[in-house]
Length: 436
Image (tube, rainbow, N blue to C red; front, side, top):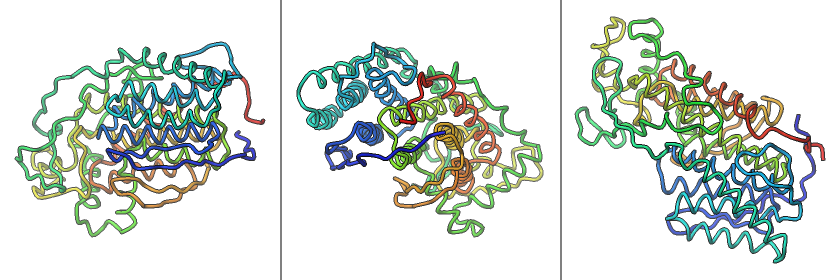
């Protein structure tokens, strides 16, 4: 159980707008914990600016957070390292180590943003007085980054996987979306996104298929009928059954899960007075669970290759189920991502994140309030537990019209398995420093 302490300094981060609409956090006499948070914000802003897809974003974010964790852990050994370990060097500057570790990974992975990244790095180092502590911190940061970069250099994330959409009942194919309008047969339907991502080497799991769920229901089953009728009624673009709050829930959770759940973790790190070591471990575990969640989800998605609700409803006359009827003009409330339906990635990642947070803080029943980011920024919601938030996150995909109930239910199951597995197999405490 985590024991809170009195925090000596609160987060003091100035965000300034720079070229490419990237928000660069500039620490102002920041404590090392604030430095961890600032570089997490910068990392997520940069990866989002250069890549619209959550999969490569999650991989880079996990690499950054693991490098940051190993850097501070090399100064004082509190947890088992991931990729880099050395004899403790308590005289080294944690701020310099954190900033350098994050900077090196980001510059290596996103060289197009090197100017922005180095500006933030120079600013961070400017808060550390010259001397041996600063020099040692920089050296540790370089070494921690090099270790994770080497470890992930052959993880198959850059392997192109051929994929051709299928045809027929139950099989995924490019989907129509209401914004912009994609009528059936349009030539600009988006192709399958990262069909080989399920083969990327996980960070903590053994393989992407480790917790693969059982698969979607048969098209002629009662469960499939219920799934179709539910999303057809509540997830339609102009459904009169969807309340204003339900519409807000769908928009609130539409943001990339790695961004939304990281924001929740950062807020809790501040309100619970976590120090640099605790904050670095929390964010590393969270981002590893999300990165592995993406890998596991895509392994299952392209294994089952199941069609999305918009295709299923428009082509229901061909599914062999007498209880479903086609509606060729049916549209979703929000846009359908360009990948197979089962399981729901949002559900997997939300449940994984919730399990990591509950395990870290020793209880699921932790209250928090958070506000959404793009594309529907500014929506604020409050929760009494992590599992409540994860369940609502899953429900949002049905309300948006882009997932069936079974994909959400099984996604939550898969995510909980991943979220429990990750902290049990990496970064375990070697001594209990939490009561300091």
